[in-house]
Length: 272
Image (cartoon, rainbow, N blue to C red; front, side, top):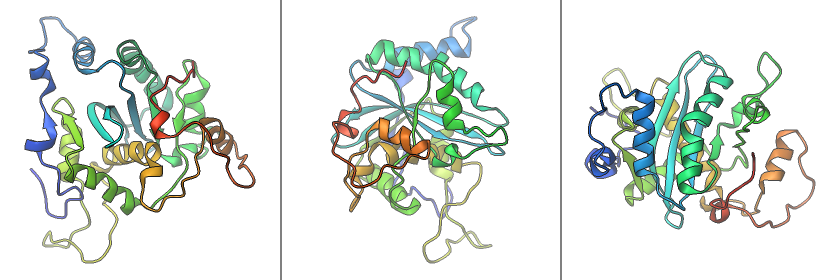
């Protein structure tokens, strides 16, 4: 069920949602098969060799942390097939570190032949009560999770429109396995008045139970495809430079071109 004031009005379950479990012939869970075992069987069936996989992160302290797993099926059109999701509340960074390195990273590396690439909320670089950020903590424990969260180009509404345009062009796909993400894309909304009508003018999407998965989605596009945003500053920033900025070492002067960027992200990066 969808509501008025939807952010992603172009999202259509009959167009963008694909039942990969049926296509792969997975059927129902087997007797005594755990949810974790079924997830692995599902991912083994739908991850394709040689195509990069991406993970979008929306970090939460008081709010839920939401992470999404997708596979880039066409880099030129920026088409990503979103295949899995994970969201919990009240858990620390090590809980998600353990989940990703147990449930996603090994099967992604084994089948795609590439390391899982992570993109996340720039707020995750802020220090928490332990004087450590989520970004630094996730990177600190082997096997390291390196969350790319720069450069911070474009406004919230620009990136909403960027993702929305991919939906309009049908360069966007969600597996029916991702029930919460599907609900999110139907329920993520702008502010409405007492009668449920959209409020005129430019408004930011409402921060509620649906916004966390939506933000994880948007961060994946924002930090993978920032050079594809219209009028973006097209200086290329490599991973080493991103990590340097995270430490507060902002480089002086123009940033030199590097052999990096979205078109090269599919190459295996040896973070481990």
